[in-house]
Length: 253
Ligand SMILES: [Zn+2]
Image (cartoon, rainbow, N blue to C red; front, side):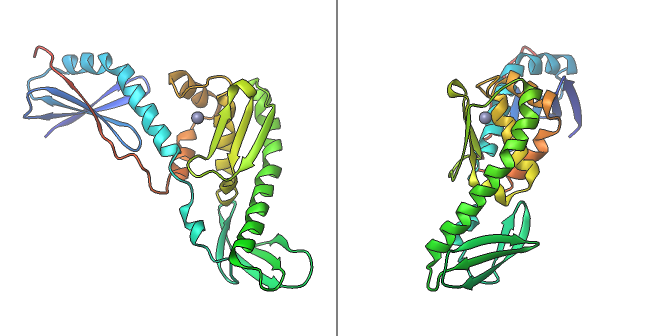
């Protein structure tokens, strides 16, 4: 089995010669790798022409896979956290030890180096503790976002009317271009600050282009080269999409 590559702008196609009758083109999740299997006698020129005729389709599949990867359910494990002394909790991508103390008086959450200090009233149940930590995470994101908007709004030439931070089950962020509002997932405070920045930029780019089309990704490439690494990092939790998209061609060989 011999393998060659065809480069079409930003898309690299791996070509494998096999004992097959037709040219088969597949886009593979999660990253949208493009592969063609072709009959041994098919010329590279023919294969190239076939790949070019499928460019739009390839881009559509890749955009779809990116979106699936991006929408992978964020950080499920936190659901199982007990919020007890000595438990590890991620803060801005770093593990911190939860130190719980009980006292009469207003509860509080405070970060002290790698220790997350949770002070609660005696007999506060898990749900109450969880809510306190959750509120603290939301505050972290709320505080981190304005400087990012200050940096990125002028770069992109956009202006956000309002941003919200809330817990979302399936998305890291969302944008309503008509209202110029963006929403960010509270859970982003558990991941590294670069990932929050990436999601903020992604949502701001939606103010320029509402859809995940070629133009959208061109804008991402232009303003945040290498953003794919952030996307990959964010989707290191289970990715839902395991659908393999296949397109078949029957060219006169
Ligand atoms: Zn989007």
